Image 1 (cartoon, rainbow, N blue to C red):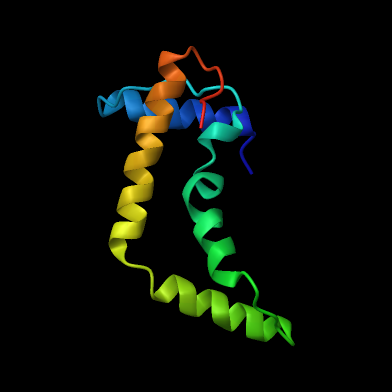
Image 2 (tube, helix red, strand yellow; image 1 turned 60 degrees about the vertical axis):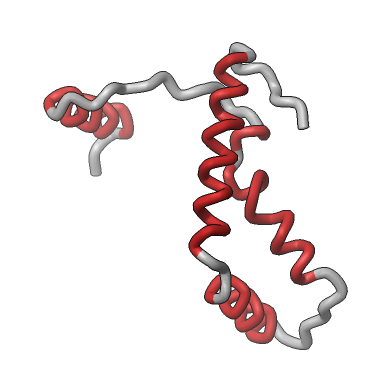
Length: 98
């Protein structure tokens, strides 16, 4: 197994070789978590008031919900997240107001 810094170095070398721009990674920020931003709210709304007798029933409902999501759900979420990331960058990595 490679040490994590070795893998990171290899990845950076590969990206540079193919001309990809390496952007600095922002400090951890709850405003930038994709799942919290777009996924969990609608999922919580969907599951609200439901009760499941078994874990398998819950898993089945989750699979059904994910299978029925339109591709636009993810497209909108990604586009909104990009706007949120840019706002965070513009605010010098401070928290983004809701």
